[in-house]
Every structure is written in structure tokens, then in C-alpha cells.
Length: 435
Ligand code: PXG
Ligand code: PLP
View 1: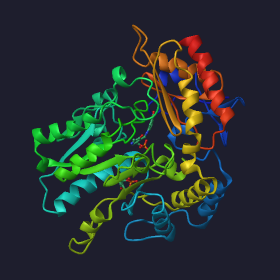
View 2: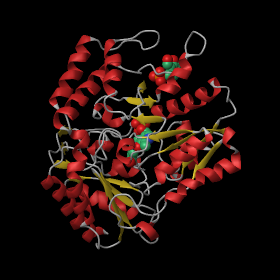
View 3: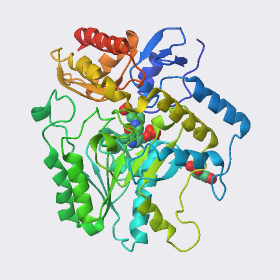
View 4: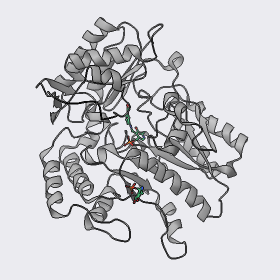
């Protein structure tokens, strides 16, 4: 193919390596991608954790095409269009009880910035403008904008960008290989790590802290499940000190764990949820922040006028709304948002069958997500071994995701048993060869 690769500066990619040996995808349907040469690839990553109903589903394709012809765009500031209201109303059915107000964005990163700004403004409206501090967690990922970069806890994503935001602190991460390796589902040990929040309260004083943001299951860093009792303890500490709790569910939202949201799966309700990705099945960029009604209503008691000076040109874009409504129809018709429960045992047995292979130091799973952790290769850059496994699987026709020293498995929720077997047998073959 005669394609000049020079001009496009690729995101989160080793551009020079990639352009020496490109990996291109040009067609997709249901569980598969195809390369421009026609090689079929099984999608073990749901694109990038987003194509939860599988690729190019007819109902969604038609809804997008129809909307493009009907009305391409409508201004979202001081104007509206019916689909955005219809979608907001429809989403009530899926979110945890009480989080029944929604602000639309275009990505997970924008959802994070939006939620944090709402938290600051909320405290200010209540006369607590001294609550400006924001707390994240080591190994967290909250997108790439300034606040998300500052609150995130993955070192390489932060170090090039200065201090980015003041008044930020982090709790420790919950990964504990020594005590929890090869746990199926939630680890037994580590609930006490939530007490890090008490430590930060003692240090900074609760009256300075606006919000805590965590991924209920950390995705990008390599699928870290919360220890049993951990999230409830965070919830309790936040309640005790008037701190808002934000769950970043950009990956876990829309069915990944076997419930619509991780909040329901783990039985802990935050004050806000950030979402994106699966809301449109990855088709048209869209994100959302779900907010407890009481937070929203605080804004509605302010003097008349614009209650929240915040929004994006493409907030509630008509094409994204049409795509999201058709996505929800597809999820409903096929029971996909809870299919992770039915498939849990199969997924669990499949990924844990890789225990004992060379350099595999941990395996984690729940619902429709799993991860294999490798010992780092001595003398090589961190993550090299996992990246070689990723490359090997790609050559064998399976797309997985390397995340540091981990391989993450997060297929579309329509995956069948034999496709799970294909992922695992490919991994076994490749791990034996390269790991
Ligand atoms: N929060 C979380 C928890 C995420 O997983 C974002 C925010 C940012 O969303 P946008 O739409 O701005 O990318 C994400 C995104 C990976 C990977 O390698 C994960 C994400 C994005 C890119 C790569 O696992 N998650
Ligand atoms: N920069 C400029 C100069 C703009 O005019 C706008 C929006 O009008 C933006 C940035 C923000 O763009 P968006 O609303 O797509 O996030």
C-alpha cells in the first residue's frame, strides 16, 4: 500500500518503531478486524476498551447514517435538540440510583476535567471554597488533560509535564503481588490501604479537600481489582469528612465487569461517575459525567443565569446521541451489560489456565476482563516482555493490549467460548516462545 506515514504524529505510540513496521487495521465486523492485506485479527481488546457490542453493528451504523442526513450539528449552548434529552433520560435506567443528572462530553479525559470542576464549584456554591484539594491514587489513569494528568498516578504519563496542577495528592495503589498473586476476582488483602485517605486528611485537613477520584478497577495500569472492602471504606471516609467520591468508569462503565457500572458490581455508590468509550460502542466520540441529583440541584439554587460556565462545542453532539441510543438498544436486546456474569466462569478458567507458564507472576480477572503480569526482562526497558507478547499475538492473529508488564484482555462482550479459547491458546503459544 502506498501510504506516507510521516505526517501523522501518533498518540501514545513509539512512532519511530511503528513507522518501521506498521500495524494497520482497515476493516472490522463483530469480533474481528482485518488488515489492509486481508489478514483476520480476533479483537481481544474491544478496540481500546470501547467496542463492547462488537464492530460495525448494523443498528448503530444505520442510526449514525440517518442522523448525519437528518441534522449534522446543533449548537449546545443556550440551544438544544431532542436526542440529547432523550439520551440523558434513557441513561437513568443504567446508572446507580441517585446519579440521575448527566453532563455530556466527548471523551474520558473531558469527563474527568468536567467532574473535577463540578466538585470545586459545588463546594464553592455551598460556601466551602476552601475545599480545593484533589486526591488521586498511584497507578491511576484519568486521561491526558491537565487535571487528569496531575491526578493520574502512572509515572511515565506525568514526568514530562511539570507540576501541572497544585493542591493534588495521591493515595497508595492497591497492587500487592506478595499477598494477592493469582487471586480470582477481588483480592483478600488491602482494604486497609483506603486508610491512606485518613492519612491525607490528617495531613491537609478535610476542610481543604474537595474530591477523591479513583478507578473502581484500575484498567490502563494493568487491571487491578479493588481489595475486598476497600471501596466501601473509601466511601465511608469520604462521607465522614464531606469529601466527594468520583469513580472514573471510562473503562468499567457499560458492562465490562458484568453490570452496567462497576459501582453496581461492587455495591458502592460514588457521588459522580465519569464515563466514555462504551457509551457509543466506540463509534462516535462521547463522554458523560453522571452526578448525584443533590449536587446538580445545588447549582440550580444559584442566582439566575448560567449555573455552570463549562461545556464543549460538541457536548451532546447529535451524531453521538444517535449512536449512543442505538448502542443502548443493542446492549439491551442482547443482554450485553450483564453478559459478563454468564461468561465470568469461562473467562476466569481460561485466563488462569496460563498460570505456571514462564515468567508469569500474576493473573487477575473479573467479568469480561483479565490480565497476565510478567516479570520484567532483566536489563530491558520496563514492559518489554509484555510488549513482545503483544507483538507475538498480533502476528498470530489476536489483538491484545500491553500495559506495562501486563497483557490486558478485554474483548467485546459478544465473545463466544471458542474465541476465548483462541485468545488463551494463542497467548500460551506466544508466551512459551517469547517470554
Ligand atoms: N479515565 C479512565 C479510567 C480511562 O481508562 C480515560 C479516563 C481517558 O479517556 P479518553 O477517552 O480521553 O482516552 C481513560 C481512557 C490503555 C488505554 O492502554 C486506556 C485508555 C485510553 C488509552 C489507552 O489501557 N483509557
Ligand atoms: N479554542 C478556541 C479558540 C475556541 O473558540 C474553542 C471553542 O469555541 C475551543 C478552544 C474549545 O473547543 P471545544 O469546545 O471543541 O472543546
